[in-house]
Image (cartoon, rainbow, N blue to C red; front, side, top):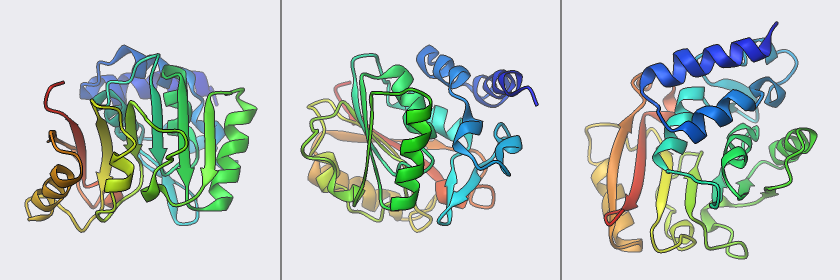
Length: 227
């Protein structure tokens, strides 16, 4: 299989065609080999338009979701980013192509170890991965220019938000419990306002709904209202 050609096709048909325009994100996704972050059995499906299993009942996110979150975060070459939920390490690698430093926390030790080996094999020296509770952030490495939460969170955000620089950006998939059209979104917004005044909430619907990717019903990007 020509993975390089498949990667180009993925970016063109799954990412650009759906409206992602950030040149940093597009170029990074053309470079990072998604197949490296999957098992040998799953590698042939690396550029499918869907999340894929990576073990521990976790998945590598759908490429479009990764692209949309990173575009919304407006990442740049000088940024230091915190990722909550390392998973396979793929999103961290994409961010590392753009940013100065990526700090990533994964609660499953086996996944953290595997992700670390993946990024090391690809030669990344600006990705730092540790096992731990991502809801507590990474105080020793703070502040961050952006935080990407790649795991569902039920409201334990204040400690994470505290690690942001004055103009914060957070992208996260909201767990199924928040849903669309209910009171969950308003509750989350109120909670964020309480722990980081000045944040506004922008919704980015992944367009496929719970049946397609239950872990990512809704994308929320919280950014400073002054941005």
